[in-house]
Structures are given as C-alpha cells and as structure tokens.
Length: 223
Image (cartoon, rainbow, N blue to C red; front, side, top):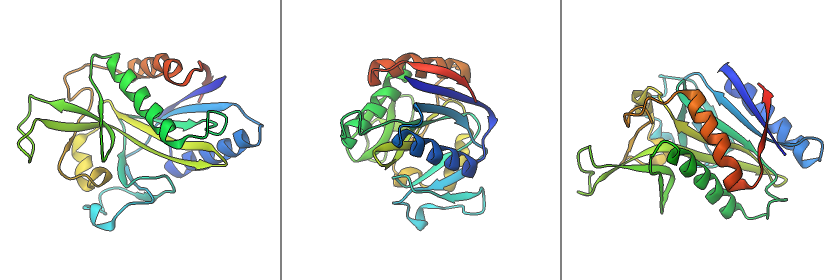
C-alpha cells in the first residue's frame, strides 16, 4: 500500500527535503511503505541540477533553493499543489522513462477530472494545455501554457521530489524565472482556465486517478 499524507498550511522547503530523503531511505531499506505527500510551500524558487543562472531573472524576489532533483528552475507557492512521490521504482520495473511517463499520465488523468485536456510535448518537460482563447504563440500557432511541472530524483531506486499542479497560484510570480528553461510559452492554472476548483477537489482527483496509473490505492494519514 501507498501511504497518502496531506500537510496543512505552508511547509518549509528544506524541512520537506529532509523528510523526503529520510522516507526514501527508509523505503529503500524496507522499513517504510511507499508514500505520496501533498504540500503547499511559501513562495520560493528551486533550481534543479540543469538550472542555468541566466534563467533566474529576479533573484531577489523570493528565496532560491538549490536542489538535487532533475530539471531547471521552478516556482512553488500558495495555491499550487505539490505532490512528493516516494515510490520504489526498483520494485516497479526499474524503468525511469516509464516512471516519468506514469507521472505525466497521473497529472493528465487528474486534470481530466475537471474536463481539462493535459498534454505532453517532445522536448518540453511537464504537462501543457492549449489556449485557443489567447493570442497566438511566437510561431504563429495556438498558444500552449504549462499547468504542471515534473522533477524527480532517485536514490537506491526510490524516487523523491515529484510533481506540482497549478490550482490558483499567483502566476505573476513565475516571471522571476524562466520556468524549466522554456521562455516561448506561458504558465496557467485551473482557476486561470475558469474553473472554480478548491484544493480539496484537486486532492480527491489526485487520489482517485493514482490507482488507475500506478496500480495501488493510497491509505490516508495525517500530515
């Protein structure tokens, strides 16, 4: 079974990292169950292992945390659901590419609960939605905005870090970085798309779609 933890309030980022690393180590040692941990963070930027300094366009705006997850710069803040994913990828097939595809599929299935069509794009990390209601993109095609980010790390074949879905964060806060190194596209959220979704609604959708993608149902625990 997969333990499902939801924390209330805003979670300190370094404390979250320490908790994730400890749980991942315990899972690898066979001393703990797999875990999905849902949190919100105060406004901050994180730099993955591929982050480029030039993509931090406003370094004084919020705290910046270097982290060992894959990827580039990401924003976290209130109104964004972060799901930290501590799963035994070794026991689940030792296929990292497939695991990332499962994370993408989980996000897409969750968005579908709200009649939002999420899509992945070759060469662009994360999950995207088309915006025919917005001006055309720089290539003259229909604009696409990012609604969810993905960045993980594996230690002894156990994952940590995970996904983030924009429910109703302050989208202006993304302007302090080039999100995931992609400057040609925008960022959106469920509320920006016109959907009056609450965080509890999103959490229910995440839990409901998890088993269909990963083949295990979560057990709830307090945060």
